[in-house]
Length: 175
Image (cartoon, rainbow, N blue to C red; front, side):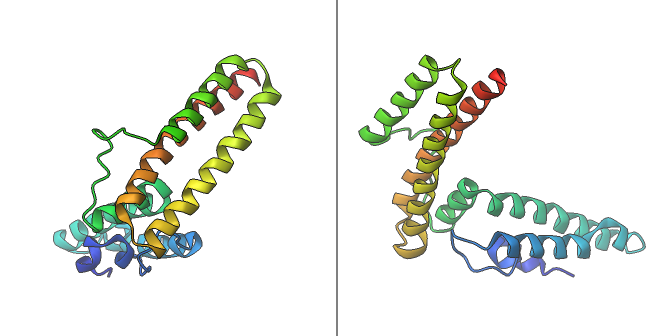
């Protein structure tokens, strides 16, 4: 059965190297392998403690998988491992250039809310910006080990993700 002692480290749990830029297909394969192993049907005839452990491991596998699959959650998790709290609830300070770009995007969204083509162009710009920030996060974590910088970038990525959802909603309303 899955090694419960590895449960305090999601990367170790899935047999992955701790880094931001992970092989998502390897994560998927490790997750499916663990889920097969701990599936309740495989432990239906086991003792109560075996069934309980299998259920705990299945729950842990789900939590760890969702955390590592999502770039924001994965980055926050790595920062946390290294003693850096991103302070999402209390620290909303962002660089002025970032805030200006956010304001420009909001104005574009407001002004062009009925223009599908313009919103699609804005979506491309937002997606490009998101990819750039994800690359910066990967560098900050995997190369430079600058977890404070990574936390700042992750806070920005949350803003971008939130705006991208609003943009998607605006596009969906037109289609």
